[in-house]
Length: 219
Image 1: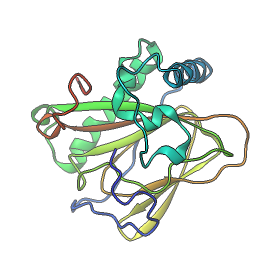
Image 2: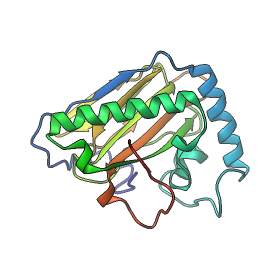
Image 3: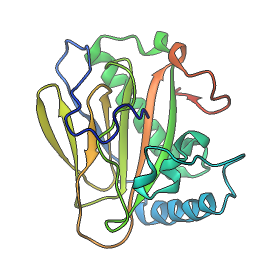
C-alpha cells in the first residue's frame, strides 16, 4: 500500500502499461464467508488489544480515517500467515489470477519470483472508509487486489487511465489489477462490518527490504 496523495480525488493513473487494463477475478464459492467474517472480527479485536502485532502499532497514518486497526497496521502482519483453510484457498486464487495476469502482460511468472503481502479491512459506515489511494508501482509487474468477505452491496471506484470505473463488490469474489490506478471505497448504507481482505503482489527484486519476515513467496 502507498500513501502517495492519499484522499486526492483527482489523482490520475500512473500506470505505464501499454496493454488493455483488465480486472482478473475468481469467485470462490467453496469458502465459508460466515466463518471468515468471525475470524476477521476476532483478529480485529486481538489487533486492537495489541495481541497480534509485535512492537508498537502504527500511529498518525493516512489510514487513520478508515477507523480500521488492521488497515492502519497493514505492514505489521501478513494475513496469509493466518492458519485457516479459507485463507489458503484465497491464496491459491491470488496465485492463479497472477498467472493469468502474467499471460496478459507478457510476463514470465516463474522468472518474476512473485511475493505477496496481505491484510484485512474492517469498516463501518458511520466510522470511516478508505479514500482515494494507490499501492505503489507504475503498473505491471506490480499488482493489487482484494477479496470480499462481507462487502455486498457496495462499490469500489477505480480511476483507470482517463475513465472512472465502478467495481460492484460481490461476496466471495476476489479481484486482481495492475497497480497505478487510484481507487476508493464508495459509501454504503447498511449496518454492520464491511470486511475485505487485500493483497499486493510484486516481484522479489522489488520488495522493500525494511520489512523482514513479512512478504511470502507466491508459489
